[in-house]
Image (cartoon, rainbow, N blue to C red; front, top):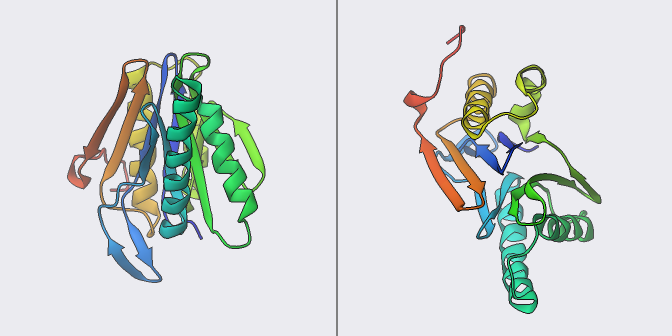
Length: 202
């Protein structure tokens, strides 16, 4: 079970990724503030769900391979290249690993891009949600997502989605981590639990 909530969404010129920060071992919360948004390259991140150890291992392997790849080609790698590496590792070790990663970032060829990877699947989507908390917010994201949202709208969309998932899902909680990526680079942000938006039942 992917005990977490992760989300990524495209806007015109970049992407916004978000996650909660709770890590559980069975019924026990073992880390309240883990950052599940992992750097793969300067303008490419992934959101981790599933086994924390497995997901972090995949991210570290891809980070290393992208560094080598970027030196070989003499420029920043494409987001699709990072997503393909994640997909290949996930599929090759599908019997041993239990992890699902959403890959998102910006490159000069494709702009802002979000890719979902699951076993042998690689699919570009305008937005993606994952983890146990996603079950509680699919209706919200389907209703609230609008094509052509601004960067600020996407950031609020991500924060609202994570906050709603955290309020409903016992395996999601802590703080909300955000990363906004565009042509200029990546900007990381942490929103404390008492600063998250509240909804009618809270």
